[in-house]
Amino acid sequence: EEVGSTTLEGEVLSIALASQPKDLLAAGTTAKNVVLLSLPGFDTIAQLRHDGHVRSLSFSPGPSGLLAGGGGTDEMNGLMTKKVSHCEMKTVIWSVGTDGASGKYLGSIAFDDIVHATAFTPCGKALAVGGEHRSIAILLVDQGFKQAAHLPCTAGVRCLSWSPDSHFLASGGEDMQVSIWDVATERLAFKLPKSPDWVCSVCFSPDGSWLACCGYALKEVTLHPVMCSAEAGDASVRTPLAATPNSAGPPMPAVAVAS
Image (cartoon, rainbow, N blue to C red; front, side, top):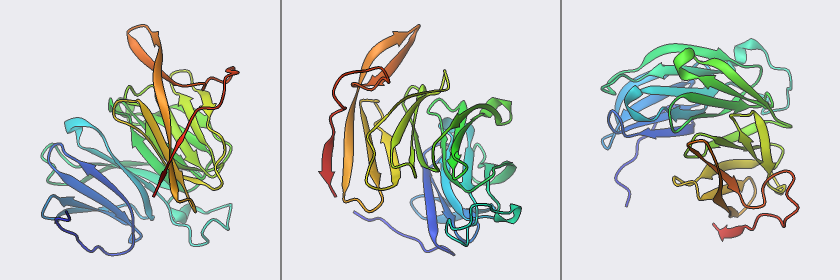
């Protein structure tokens, strides 16, 4: 059941929802800003300036009230490999307040190319940022978003998803594969088989038992099981079936779900 809709200036490129400190919707647009709306009435709370096309949004979990918006302007649609500074290739951090009633600019992190993906960890301690610069930056929230890790990728990153325990990070993009990173060791745990096209979305289930992904020009969602197979100290480490680089077992089974 649809309960409402709203029309915004420019094309909507990204959205994010928050339930704390209250129900909020953030929408990033080609008008180079983020519109912060209260739900369910779609009342505009704030217009948050980015300066570039806002291609990804992520709220920090809990009542901390942080919002990250990544993006950049690419008028050549990827045909120009070397972009200039006025393309505003950056991730901006805002505070939406403990009451969710305002939006305040806190700062921005510049990148060498368009940012397509931003994702706070479920524990709220770090922010992952990926894009056409062929890498993922892990930024520490409590240290002013200082970079703690750099994960090199073979191609541009289009999507990111954290495992529920904040231990593993899934990425997908222009290399047509989903990569799973062990962030604590900054190592690539494994890669799924190549897709026919770029991967546009990847997602862990809330309990960490499934990993789903889909790609451009595809009419299916691929589902992969994840199992708990080891423990490190007090932390439960989840590793996918037959997923380690040295595994000689069969490929991970997948279920195609028609769209």
